[in-house]
View (cartoon, rainbow, N blue to C red):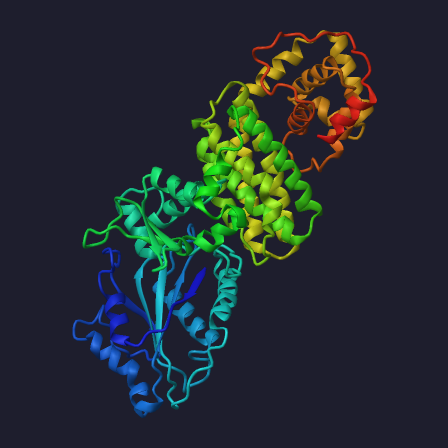
Length: 566
């Protein structure tokens, strides 16, 4: 259940006209009272003899009874209460009881207090009600509304438990503003996948992912098809920006613009500038830095992003809070960039993963931005390397990167959970589930090729790799040898051996690098860790079918040191 305290107003009748009217986008259906301070209060929605003015006069009587000098300038209090998507529809009687509990919990009309404020609860949709109250009590005093928003959230948690509704976590004020009811209804009428606010937020996040400076950011916004307005001071300095979808218009036919801060707290221009750093805030510098490095093919960019993600994992596990928060925020940019450049069969799940992780990337822990450079560069390289095919080396390295991002999402959920960031932890866990599904789509072809390669190994070589597993990871050996991915791991160990590496040491190190309990397939994880660690091709479909069964010469100390440093 989602309660929201709105800004206070000065015109009771104005709010009543809105609540009982058709709505901004004709979304209000059958407006009527479900509860009020007085059971005999007139209901303009159900009583043809009652008017908005009748109800307004009764609500405002305690205010009008005061001398003008004592009347509050903003005397109209407004709370909306909405059930979560997927919750069952509640009856008018249930909504009426919820309204009474909310006005009692927030201090508007405490239980057993006959001198409380006058209030009314209006329902004009299946999933929510609006409660309005006038902020003068019957005894002429003002209500005690300290922390009314927090108290409404606490009461919502109790109501969820008692009514069997979806259990939500109380927010911490860092979430992006949810689409309004009017925005959601408008999206449904226009057959949009998401409300305009969410479409814009996703597009802006993709535009800023890895951008080197303001010029590149605004160029990306323009090329994405958005309408962009810049707010410029008389001095010529850029103060902010607003964006709109070309086909999202109001009644006058004008585009509906949203500022960056209205889309999400971290999409305001000052917060975006923090990502660029002091040296990159001008467009000229951004363009110059953008030419410094060529990301190469999509596969190269994905391998580099995998390595940067691994380093970020270490920081999240062991670094201080500011550094970890920076890595988590920048990981959101990598997800945005990967979704933007992914092949069709993984695009939807990666978009959903990026959309979910957006909530996990913000908290009250302030990110120390200098720690996020590697991930932001990885996001930049992903964007500039262009779209990847769903097959071959870039398709296989996509699976490798998704596998690493899955572990980063799990680590992020754990990090937030330890700090009691319930909403962020849940969002990171949801991200991990989307990444798990995306991985299954991305890994089918490359893991299938490795599986066939492993099955074609000579029996003595297969047996030798099984012995390597028992020697290197005895506690996991039986599980690994029983998994369908065992043959892919056998092929990888044979490839590593043929390339001059000692497979037992490699496997032991790969298994010890991080937990494997959250992995759906231990062998898949070990395959990608090994192939990344020793630069083996991610896609083997075009390689010879059988690596040499002869063991290679032992590595030199310098070769082993170079491999461990990766």
